[in-house]
Image 1 (cartoon, one colour):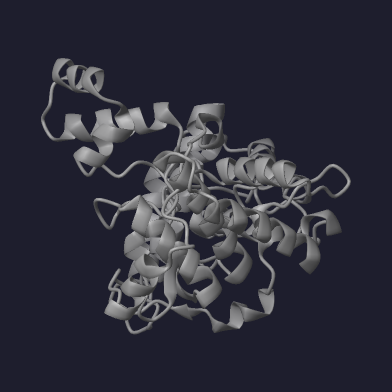
Image 2: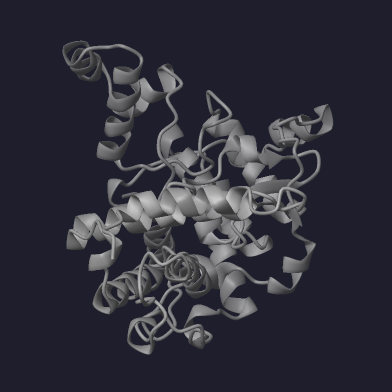
Length: 370
């Protein structure tokens, strides 16, 4: 059988899928969604196992891929359903290879490989908190955000950030993987302020369907988010809602963007000697990375410990904060127009005139945003 490179087969597969049904309303959608999944899979195969050819792909490689998806699910980077979708995309590609005579069998369509996938069974009750426990955490972060008279601007910004994070997770159906940066998933880089529309009360996210969706933001989520934005004062709309506080990550982003803008390394290092990477990013409107899903879990773990909230040694995860999953049906596929950060005069006056509302909060902990 002819030796075919996996990357070449993927290119042909995506091209065929993109033009498979030009009259379909979803023409090209599958190819667009599948591309990032298949590209990451091929890169992982080569990096971890040195596999470049379809002919050398074996069941054990696919079992290892399934196990990798399970580990990422356990770390909170993916949901079990998302991991299953990623695996299914790869399995469908390999089935196409079989039908096209590129390979004899599909190594992904075996019990041995699929048995390593994460279970789709519901998580334990420790990951789904009671209303009382959830309210206790929200009350704690809200009171901390209000009591800011004697703290620094940075600390005030941090407290408002944490209050907004908990409020959005608690009062909307936005998932952690839609809100925060998912490492190694180039499509899930974290929500930005450009994704928020305060007029319509929605936030645009990449849903589990791998399509952009507009998700409702109830008032109890919007108000803390607006207050947080006032004190964060993002210099650009592509600024993440919840930026990382991990200084090395910010420095890497600053260096990368400045190099792309034509600065040499000597000039860049000189700029970083004069100020911090965080300050330089703000000065040059260089959007930092968003906090990672694991970083968000770390924040919630710390808040639970500070609030004295504990369930058999566990803590409230981003998944556990979400309270009303019945509202999932109110999600809708995003329209072609993008949401904006427009805020009415009334909304602006509510934010700045509320003397008890926190002005800003922010000690940023480098261990919380990898």
